[in-house]
Image (tube, rainbow, N blue to C red; front, side, top):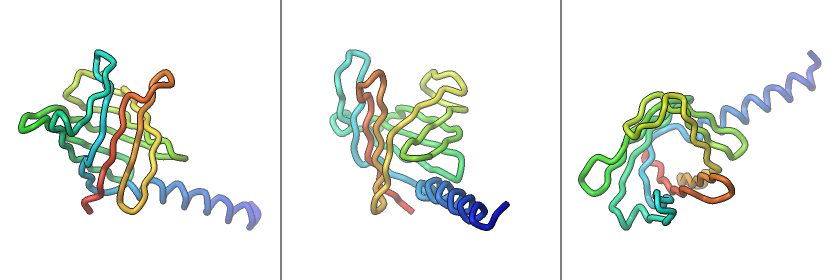
Length: 133
């Protein structure tokens, strides 16, 4: 392999690693909204939603509460490339099949992770997370 091609490959690998590692750590849900079963957008703040998510290089886990009651939990693997974050479920409390995937457009700036999930051209979920560590 030529030297120029080696440098290009190393630069690509470094950028992919940077994208994954910028998400590593613990995150606290700050705000968000989701589309409910009736097609109504529901604010997380209005229903007292709180959550934490932890990500390693390839895996995620989250727990969420609605007020002081358990709401949902899930874990599995994820990928983050070119502004697209995709979770692949291994375990969850909300009835999705193992291997179900959820993809979000995302960005991370100054310790704030913003993501939005779209379905059939309509935004169905939006979240803002603050990095804890």
